[in-house]
Length: 317
Image (cartoon, rainbow, N blue to C red; front, side):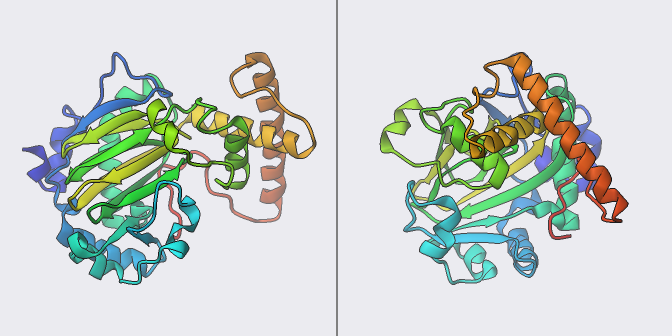
């Protein structure tokens, strides 16, 4: 089985067998869909390896954790303060079944060993993805380890995301990235401009509008940028891995939302992104030019700016 191979052996096999299996015929970068994967038994995704990774990432403040008394409606950014898990990463990860906690190992690609894993996994699916959604960059990895009966509060993220179940089972609710009942256009504008989720508010009736995935090991889901989601763990401990990235389309979308947020700050209510393509093209050209001039000015001051097409996100490195 591929997942039992070492990294060097897996690299030779993955050229013809993607580690994430998508239905290329139906794949669309802005459509939620199920996927399968071959990572269940990968040695870097087992508890012993994750304890060591957790210790290394905790030293770099690249851990997010909260207790399992958080709910779907708990503000995602505030959950660690509102429902603290005071155990160390190692203590939580080594006994997660009894830890009463949720833990995310953030940006695992800042660890050289796991950077190779993130690259290997996304390299294996990049040809299929880029036929529909070119410009894959700023790759990142996130590993979620949760105790029984634990909830990941309702939120959204900026990246496209393959979320893969490694151990245990859980239910994931995902909403379409253009569902303005669940997440308003204003909420997305503000999120892209200020990285704030304060306009995203949970209501229990949202469940009826969701794509629901009951994930077992070997199964997963693809969710586009700013697809709201919420996760409920079952009566088991769970390990889940996410592999995320940006593309030309996500960068363009983010710039348009930033521009619309600035319009709102000036008292103007813009049309939703995508509703008026010609106006979107003009807006994108304008803000791209403005930001380009800013980057040139920054370069003259001698300040280095990370490449906008970097292969990995190397936060904290």
